[in-house]
Structure formats: structure tokens, C-alpha cells
Image 1: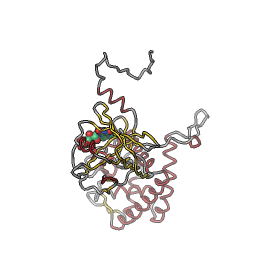
Image 2 (image 1 turned 120 degrees about the horizontal axis):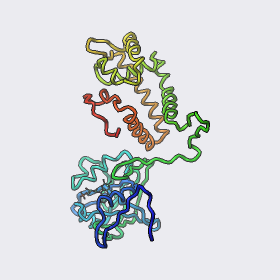
Image 3 (image 1 turned 60 degrees about the vertical axis):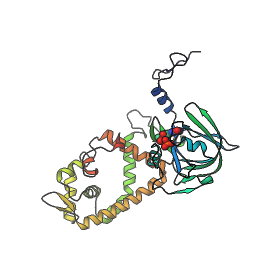
Image 4 (image 1 turned 180 degrees about the vertical axis):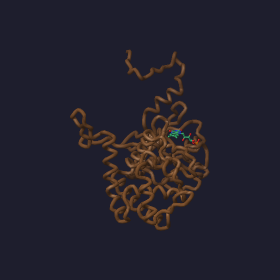
Length: 345
Ligand SMILES: Cc1cc2nc3c(=O)[nH]c(=O)nc-3n(C[C@H](O)[C@H](O)[C@H](O)COP(=O)(O)O)c2cc1C
């Protein structure tokens, strides 16, 4: 039977029986299957805790409760896992990328400095995961260059944490698709913007979000522009006019000087021959306002959900990299070396 394939796909097959696939392409094709990320732990015969990052985890059976994962024959922990009677699967949350990286490094003492508990069979149990399954080895099967473990689940716990995702060789976030009733209504009139126009979504979100912060600015007698400049001045002990202009380029060009003058007049900033710096009073006002703004941010992000909050921030950071390649790196980077944040790629 012949199969037609979309134009942008490439067919790969061994040229002849017994020949192997192009290994890189095969990996890439497998990588299109998005998975969660787990850490599997156990105890070696000598009592040492062992573990590795694995995305080969999968459910097998509900009754009896069975799960599986597979381990590379050349893993340093291979013999210890093969001999282990018990192991635990930790489904990682979206904030556990570092932990995943630590357990993906070959042979290191992956548990150094890590707090963990003990489960069935003395298995080390990591904390703060999206879910954890404590298992007893039910069977093992050799599958090519991996050993497949099937485990009977003895105990499990689950948290509401958003999961860490692995796709195309990279970590990713998972987010819900909007339920149909949340889909933005599009404008049907020619020449009008739809409600899914990016500018509308960003603008309205900003205005509504910032409206919650404004009462705190009013309380300090500051307008929006003065607040933006005040927050910029918190980034370094002293900023030259050029640095302030660079940091706010394309955002506050017209109002920057007026806001700076107002802050100086108000006693919140000093103008020195080298540039501008906050006064003690200015710094205290900034700390109060930043604390209030962060409290509002937490409330908003909590309503959004931790997973979507992380996605939103990552995506907005990337958007900023697209629409404003010179975005204030000079000011934000410690030491101001002008290097870009990796999340903006
Ligand atoms: C996201 C991700 C998923 C992985 N999945 C597996 C897996 O399912 N099985 C496996 O044997 N190795 C997997 N690895 C690689 C192991 O974590 C890595 O080889 C580890 O160093 C093995 O530890 P060890 O050699 O100390 O035993 C994965 C790595 C990453 C980053």
C-alpha cells in the first residue's frame, strides 16, 4: 500500500532490509511525541540512592495498576536498577527543569545536598513533584538497547502542579486549550480589529492590570510615568541620563525628562554630575510600590494558574525579543554587559 505524505514531511526508511534508519532523523521523529518528564529513583544494593531522568514512562494497566519505563543498557545505574525490587517514578512539575538536568547527568552524585524521604523498599522519594508512584518491579523485558521495567504501583500521590513537558529535545510548558466559550469573538466588520488582535489583548491586559496598581501610586502622589522612571532608578545605584534613555528607549521618550524632574522636585531622586540616584525617601517609596505591585501580580497569576503564568511570562519575554531586540538588557543584566536573556530566543 502506498501512502501519500504532506509536502513538508520527509519519508525515511531503511534503504534495504537490515540497514538502519538515519539515527538523527529517527530521534527527531520520536521527539515529535511530547511527553512529561520523570525522575526514577531506587536504592543500589550497597544502599546508595540512585536515579535518572526518564521520559519513557507510561501507564500500562489500571487494574492491576501497572506502569512502565525503559532504561538504556549503557546507563551507569543499569545494574543497580535491574537488581532493585522497588523504584519510584516522580512526575516533574514545570518548575523542576533544574532537577531534571541534575538527574540526566551521567553517574554524578545526583542526591548531593538534596532533601528526600524514604518510601517502600527504602526508595528515595523526592519532594515537590506533580505526582509520584511507588512501585514494585513486576517484570523486565529486554527491548533492543533498553531494558523495559514494568512496575506494580503500591502507592501514589498527586499535586496540582503544572507538569514539565519534553518535546523536540527541549523542555516545554503544557497549557490547556481554551474551552470553546472562552474563544475570543472576532470582529466581522471589514476594517475593524478582532478581539484576538495582539495589540488589543496586550493593551487591554496592561490597562486593566495597571489600574490595580494605580491607587498605590496615587497614594504616593506619583503618576504612571514617574513610577516607571522611579522603578528604573532602582536597578542601579546611579544611572546616567544616557542609560536611562537607553533603558526606556521607545517606551517613554517624550515624558522621561519631565518625570525625572518631577522625582527630583519631589525629593525622590538626586541629580548629580554623574547622573541620577534615588534618595532614601525615593528608595523607600519604590520599595513600598514594588511590594504592592508584586502582591497584585501574585493575585493575578494565582488566578491564572501556575502553569499558564509561567507560559505567559516566557511567551511575553520572547515577544519582547521579537518586537524590541534592544529591550533594556543594558539595565536589567547584572553588570550590564548587554547580553540577552536566553528565554528571549
Ligand atoms: C528529558 C530526558 C529524558 C530521558 N529519558 C530517558 C529514558 O527514558 N531512559 C534512559 O535510559 N535515559 C533517559 N534519559 C537520559 C538519562 O537521564 C541520562 O543518560 C542519565 O545520565 C543516566 O544516568 P546514569 O548513567 O547515571 O544511570 C533522559 C534524559 C532526559 C534529559
